Amino acid sequence: MKWLTRMNDKLTGLNHAIGRFPLTTIFLIATAMISSYLVHSQKDNVKLLLTLVMGAFLSTAAQVAFERFYSKQSARFLLMGLVIVLTGGYYLLIHPVPVMSREIEIRTSVALFALLWAFIWIPVIKSQISFNKSFMIAFKSLFHSLFFSFIIYGGIAVILAVFSQLIVEIDGTAYAYTANIVFILFAPMYFLSLIPNYPSAKDQEDIKGVEEAANCPKFLEILLSYILIPLLAIFTLIIVLYILKNITGVFWTDSLLEPMLVSYAVTVILLYILVSEIENKFTSFFRKIFPKVLVPIVLFQIVSSVISLMESGVTYTRYYVILFGIFAAAAGILLSILPVRKNGFIAVLLIIFSVISIVPPVDAFTISRNSQIATLEQELLKYNMLENNRIKPNNSVSEQDQKIITRTVYYLEQMGYIKEIDYFPKDFNVYNDFYDTFGFKEYQEHLGTGNDGVYLMTEPGTTINIAGYDRFIQMELFKSDRNGEEQISEFKEAGKVYTLLKVTKGNEVDLKLMAENSRELISFPTQEIFDKFYNYTGTKETITTSEATFTKENDRAKMTIVVQNVSIEKEYNQNNAGIYIFVQIK
Image: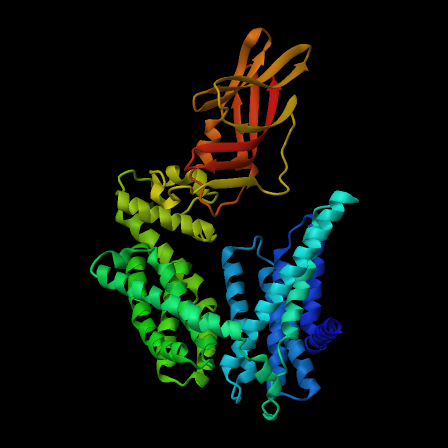
């Protein structure tokens, strides 16, 4: 029976992948187990998970390097030992950091990206097998592994849902456990099982298996040649016409075009590699024309990005845009003059540029940090706002310079660099202290327009001091459709009855604590909550207990509000929050 034969072949391939990549298998099993434990315990250990993923990528690259250049098992064990040392070193580097910053996450992502390209390129270094074939194999393997993984996960999820509905209710974490097994363990191992054994440097005879694995299916050839290439040609024409039309004006300041041009360059390069082994009129035309068109387009994009950073300084995103533009221009030149068999130079360039971007002192983060600090200092000195190594408020800053200062301060806050700058107050909080520190409110354009909503929650594991309060009430806060009073809670204290009311009047919602005979003890205008958090940026996800706490007090009562979560839909003017209310009767 054919299906049994195919199933046996797949299982054999998986067994072969386990034996071929034993250290990778161990790292992936450990990742899946720890991820499942974290789901069960509702804890978070991103550092350990990233370390294991780094180990899996390193061990995979090391294995293909062994297969390409070595034959003795002692070399294999030495490479495995080196991988373990490097993985341990990575963990020691990130372990002391109290919170995983965006910088660490991006550095790690770029390193993993470089290792992926190394995995594709290493098996064909100085080989009669072209890089194009290796890339096609990896591309097809990735597609197949993801396709089957989603099918398997979808099928298991349906079974769990039906079983939970009809037989016994199943905890929702079962879906997370399933995802861990399928996407962390099965998908990578199935991907590796589809990667053939490349011939070593000493043995270049047996390439039949590689040639078969690199064969482009007919449907993929049609998709690439007769659908994607014509669509990309039309898109290229539109871009060229836009540049020609706006070259004397808006093109140089249109930030929306930047990601579009980067995406365009990525598509051209990847499509070029994929069609390098396909011969027809469309692919021949594409290989001949598109690299030459790519070069001037990315050069225009580089100049536009440089002009933009002259005002606002370098950020890590703009650094990567410019660095990728340089890479894309170099790649376009190489693709224009080198034969298609030499496309491996593209992988080498990409790995080199990736390493440059994460290794000090020319990495994205060192340069962007120094640039943003220099930009801020230049603006502060311009208005005499630095005095005795402290910031002096100034309300006469021009609107344009307010914009620059706001952008720079928010960037430094988001990247965690403010604590490294001496002239900022030690306990500076950009969301609470901006006006008091600089003498003007944040420039609103920086904070976004349209439905740039704010969604926040208190930090997990938050503790709240309840000493001295008589009652605790939990409620959802949102604006009622009609004006009037709504009773939230009624309770007795020292033989007297007290009532907590939500009073809606137009756009205002107040919480009022009432004593007997409708006597108001204390009132809290809830708009204060939304006013405070309105200008928080989308990158801010959690708030501290201090940020979340609001208190009103008089000689009759004390009311403290602790925000559990808050949602602000700016476009639709819809605000709601989950809050804790603590009441003390005096």
